[in-house]
Image (cartoon, rainbow, N blue to C red):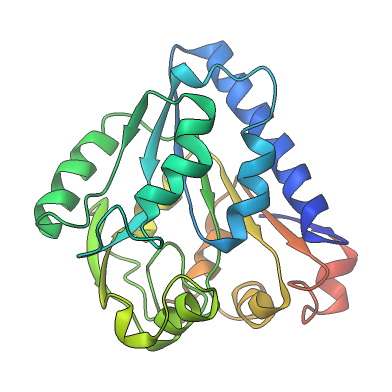
Length: 250
């Protein structure tokens, strides 16, 4: 894993987006379609804003897969990740090929069908974040590191659900769905490249656990250290609890 630390989240987002744009342009030079996995959430706001304004990407040749979605949440809800991706990525760049996780349909069947499409070819790059509880996608601790299923139905823990309230997606805990469809940990690791965008002080404890603790299902994003082509983008706030040994080498 490569670690990059910047003074503020805007600079982090710009640098990460330039990295992502280079990866996409290179993939599109080699083949007809580039495949991406897109994350959502507050951590991705600035990154997606920069990326959708990047030059030289033929978005009509980009195929997008959805990282996760709440079970039972309509696409019209402000917290719907489908709504988020439509507004912040798909409609902005005119992306034509995308595969949503329909949270209003049978989640087991949705996971099965989405997984079948995903397995048709490797993803060129996955954009991910890290949750306040260390989750990767909606794989909350203790995450399943063993399943080979590309998408799984998961139970959301209290810390994960609390984060959604604190970020303003839901008014109160009772409104947050208790289940979600998530890309599995092993499937995320099958991406050729992973770009992790993790700003803000509220992520600092999770970042420390994932980088300095054991690689463990109790810190799901720690598994990124086993992927040979991952770059983790932090700002000074999210990196604030890391040891000087790690930050000096970043």
